[in-house]
Amino acid sequence: MAKRKRKKRGWLRTLIFFILFPLIVWLIAFLVWFYWRDLSALWNKKSAPVDAPARSREHDETRPAKRPPEKILDEDRKKLEEILKRRS
Image: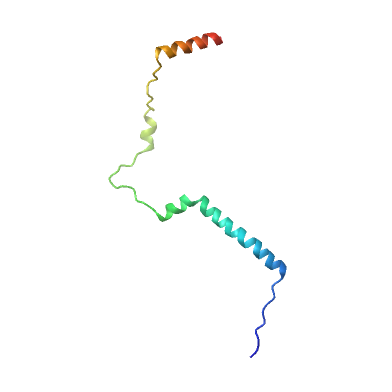
């Protein structure tokens, strides 16, 4: 029975394979790690609740932002006024 001839690989080709293959695997692993949330969102799509109304941006932009009134005690206000008087 005749033996099959094995194709010889060059040492440079083998060296490049052993260097590039791990780098490519690490690059793919890094990209999967970096974009994991986006990728997992593709697999775990959750539908929005049907009964929840969609909010429009136009409505939000027309309404002014409500800020709570600032509550500064009289003692603190007097201290701040004294500091400002000293500086000027």
